[in-house]
Figure 1 (cartoon, one colour):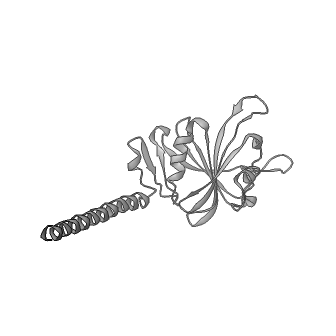
Figure 2 (cartoon, rainbow, N blue to C red):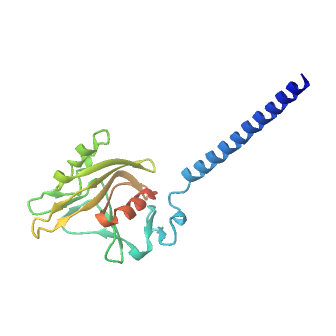
Length: 212
């Protein structure tokens, strides 16, 4: 009987210790997960030395970009046939993503007063299917692949296309990211980022790092 009692006590100690270890392990996993999820999206240190944070006094928009793209500059796009405002963030190298943000009333009017936009922003309803939203693109929709994403609480439509230039016949494979109604410097803008296929992975990283 004494041996049985001793065995029961030992079993209770082992089971209790196991439960304590399991709880501690779970707490550690949860803390690691929370630390990862709550990492500032504008913090580029975790991406390595080849990435840098774009942080300029004139705009509240921040994101991570590759150092090899060169210096970043913000420029307002002007012209006689434009209404509204569009700004472009460009880099000094020749191979980099194009980042535009425009006011909702922005239009680029060509001959015949046909408004040219990257997409029909007014019809960009994220309650619809992604492929249905891809039909809002002005061209290249026959080979378009689309995804709906969420970045920092904002809806994003990502599209991949493959189409020939109507003059040269050269094929284009752009990757586009459309993010409507974001706040930059306290005002509402439509954000459009475009890169070529070979830059897709780096541009995905840029988009995931966006803060406003």
